[in-house]
Length: 125
Image: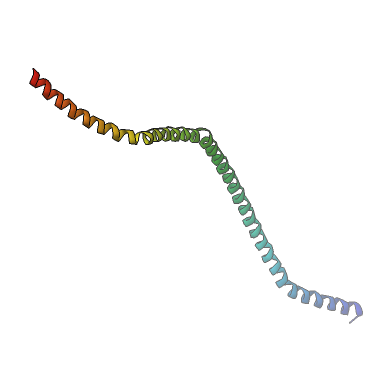
């Protein structure tokens, strides 16, 4: 055998050795590549879901803001007015509770006097 033939044989042997050892590495790399595609797809779906959630949150934030404005501009002033009316009425009643009992007592006295006067007038007539 000539040197060229020996070199060619050695080259072929090395090529076969590399091919046999590189085949599992190549297979593993293809699997990793496939896995990376799946991860990329999952990430894209997650990104899409996050964007939808962000949009939903923004809508909710806007709705809450509108509710706050409605409460601040319409409901709270009305509640303040209602509270004021009830407090005024309560204070009036509170101030006259003592006078009311005195009025009831006076009415009882007046009833008795009226009955007496009525009896006297009946005797006269």
